Structure formats: structure tokens, C-alpha cells
Length: 516
Image (spheres, one colour):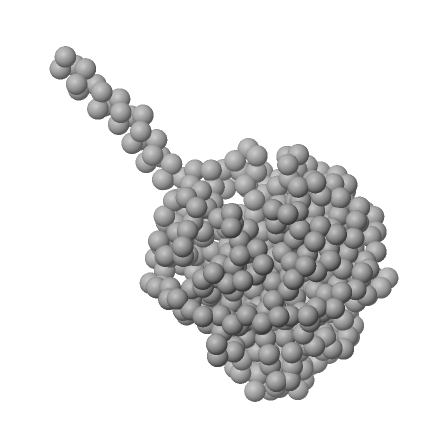
């Protein structure tokens, strides 16, 4: 009898406690980079073999990267032939494949087009499509639909007000276009950041609309029928209006959980399926500015019926089903996506280097990944975040009237597929002490500087692309340099110092921008 009483606790410990401890130890932090080109990660999904597939860009081409469950490199592909491709989002499909969406550059038209690519579990391309409207466009969100097709949204950039419009496109299982619409509400800027299918087979889109002058910037929801016609649309802001935008949303059993960005605050808003507000909570001082042509911070439902979301300035926040904070973490990178894994841990993807007090031998952009345990902890590259206490908030709802134009042309494209030269290190992304301006003999002129509105970039070297960051390193704007002169609108930015980086051929050119 004594033997049985002793063995049972030992066996129980071996079968339960040790596996649990081993699972908790399955954390890692790694950096992937190209020594000669900028490398970014923008989206991640867990693969069917418990590895991870990451979407982003390296140099001037779209990037797909596969790593195993321990973060070890398995394979990667770079896709592109026009000189500038990027993948902003990725989904795992019901047939054990992956679909990525972003943009590609059409050298004939001089505009970017929506790029959508399907690959199998080995990264082999099954089909690739480009969708074009008038102007330049980019996909920021894609979801698979119940008919095994795909719904895509993002923005269309044009010359003249409004400078940005919203597009929504539906393609079938094979990537062929079923319908596409362009929506406009604000006279200065419109952009959609996320699309989800609703239980009635329709769609709901969240994003940002702006009128100017004066600045009147609001988050919005558009509910579409299965055919893409507007069922209802509303805009949202705080009682004292500020710059407010919609980052992401989740469809929940009795409505929508919407994730909004309002200046320095993040706001969660629960609505019914007609967009009527049921409750809202404000998470102060973890917000960031809105980038109209960048992937937005995400929110995802977790297995305990709670949620995990990112702020634009580097916080990962875990909440319960009614928005109470369970924990916060601060990863040592600029996070762009976080997903819960089958072992209840989390996978964070982001970019660097980050700005700090330490100098580094590299200022080249890197992709950082962090695998945490179920409480968001890892051995390195992450630390406890600031205490966040949500407070009940009041949002103002008003009607929003969108104009709707049908259009869009689908093209079958055949981009080049190559294997990038990616390097990897264990640990964190680099920390740099700041950015110095290059010597003016780079033949790049930025004027007027300072400016309160628009800035012109003039370069004697054709091609390439530029990025604009704030002083914390947050990416605010990214676009192709389609001509020797390019006009950039900074009117919606707060007054202060910003960093402009031009990537042209094998060099980087840095400029400091002052917004009045």
C-alpha cells in the first residue's frame, strides 16, 4: 500500500507537472534579416505542422518565410519582378494552403496594384493575381469566406482630394474577381484596415475617414451585403472629437468587438450587428498615430474567450471577455501582429531596429519574432508592460454616407520567385541611438522643410521607395518613388521631428523632417 501511495504522486508529477514546465520553457526570440536590404514582417499564421509562416518584404520584393516550432529557418521565397512588392497580410486556408495579399508595382501604368498570391505548404505558387483600380492601391486585410473565396480590403491612392479611397474586392477560390467596389466618405482621406464576414454572409469593414480643413477624423464601420452593397454605415469618435480610426475587429456571437485608435488612447467598442454601441472602454496612453497605408495593430480572440491586442507603440495587452486587463507586456521591437498558439502561448512578430540609448552597427530594418508562454513572458526581448486600467468611455455615433463606385480589373500575373539570402540570430532586434542625416551630396532634396502641409522629395536617382518614422521609430508612411519628384502630405501629423529614409538601389538616404 505504501508503494502505491508513493508512486501515484510521482507518476502524476511526471505526467502533468513536467510536461507543463516543458511547455512553458518553449519560448524563443530571433531576428531575421538581409545584410544588404530592408526586411520586414507584417503578418503571421501558425502552419498545419505547428510551425509558422510569415508574410512581409525583403528589399523590393514580397517575402514568405517558413520556420519550425522552435523558430528555426525552414524555407523562404521572395516574390516580385516589378521592383516593389510587399505582403501585408496572410491567412491559412481550409485546403492547407496560404493566401497572401499586399501590393505590386505596374511598371507600365506607374501605379501599384493589389497583389494576391496563393501558395501551398511548401511555398510553391498556385496562382497570383493583380487587381487594379484607377490610381495606386494596396491590400491591408484578407479573409477567407464561407464559400471558400476571399474578401480583400485596403485603400486606393489618387491624385487630388480625396487622396485615399476605400476598396473592397471579392474573389473566388481560384482568385478570379467576382465584384469590386470603391467607397468614399471623407473629402481628404479614406482607408480600410480590416474586413470580416458576418453570420448573414455579408461583410463588415473598419477603418478611417477624414475631412479637411478643418480636421474631422473618425473611425467607421460599413456593413455590406454578400454582393457588396451597403446595408448600413456609421462613424465613431470621442465626445471631444479627436483623430479617431478603426484598427481591427472581431465578429463575436452577438455583435462586433471593434478596436479603435484615438490619439494616445486605444478604445475597445462592442456593438450589435447594426453598429449600435453596447459598451466601450478606454485604454489610456498606449496609442499611436494613424498610418493610412500601413498594416494596423491587430486584435484576436483567444481560447479563453478573451482577446489579445497590440498598441502601435509597443504594448501587448491581454484582456478577458469584457475588456478587463489580465496582463501587459512590452516586446523589444515594433509589434505588428500577435497570435495565440495551440500550446496557449503567443507569437509576436514585429520590426526593428528600435530607437534607444545604445548605438548599433546596423540601422538596416530587421524582422523580429518572439515566442512567449501563456502569460506573455519569454526569457529575453520582452519585459512587463505598463499598468493599464481601462475606464468606461462614451463614443459618439453618427451616420456616415459613402459613395459607391463599381470597378476593378483583374490581371493574371507571373512574378519571379527566388530564394532570398536571409540571415538569422537568436536574440533581439538591434537598438540604435538615432538617425543622422547623410551628407547632402546624395542628390536628394526635401522641401519645404519645416512644413505644415506637403513636402516634396526630389531625387536625381530614379526609383526606390521611402519610409517616414516618428521619433519612437513607428512607421507612419511608406510608398514607392514613382518619379523624380514625389509629394508627401504630412498635414495630419502632430508638430515635431520625423525621420525620412529613402531606399534607392544599394543605399539608404536619411533626412530629418520638421512638421510645424
